[in-house]
Image (cartoon, rainbow, N blue to C red):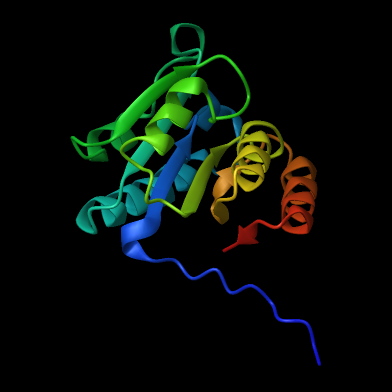
Length: 163
């Protein structure tokens, strides 16, 4: 008998959108930064329309700027925005949010920069905590395409879903 594959369907009531460090500084450094912001904004709008929670992080915003204006203006009032100084989005504040208001969440849709650093570490941390992680490939960027592609390959091997 063949081994059964995990399906990992996204269910509206148990899914959250995580937006990792899509800041003005980074969006100018990565290829197709405008497309990254546009696609991420569309996903934020969809999550908002579906009443899905949205969690946003900003890497050292005092030094590296805040979330891109168009993306920030699309965030629903219920979005949680956290500053961070480590690579992963899974900070103590985000963990508390996941264990509190978002305890029903089982799946994370993840977008952001850089794919091989912050998105990578966030995905591994979430997988280790038992979440299904769905990485939106056209809404994750790195400055170098090779870094992005190798990160995707490693994340797929680790159990993340690329979409």
